[in-house]
Image 1 (cartoon, rainbow, N blue to C red):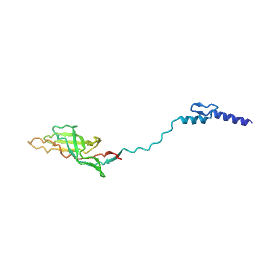
Image 2: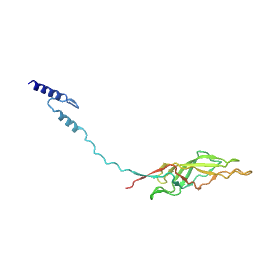
Image 3: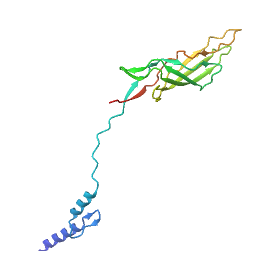
Image 4: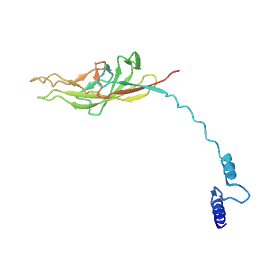
Length: 189
């Protein structure tokens, strides 16, 4: 009989030590009933959404690809300075697998990285690189990294005026990409 008393005491202790969210349950209500009511009051989890479709598809123009550019800024080794802005225009669209990524006419922006007027011993020199390409219709811009393009004057001659580098608007300024160009096109349904 002593064994049954121990069992009852043990069960009573077990019932009283089950905490609910609001503390100990009263004697008249089972512990699980209060938990069920609390769960019913909680908001049900939101249904999982299907993953969103990407709004863009990405295309990559490989490093080494040539960009045929027409110069839109005249350059001179005597009047220009390092850092001066240079503007060009893309002559042909950039396409991959028949998809036009950047249309012809896109503006290409860069700057002069070196300007050396001619001296009695050295040729005059102007060096530029392009670093931005801008879509003509949307105005969206992408950063590019291109090869440097150098224009040099004729060698200096005795008793002749020093030759100046003069590059007119419309000159060929074709360069190659040094790093891939990532182009994102909107997906049209």
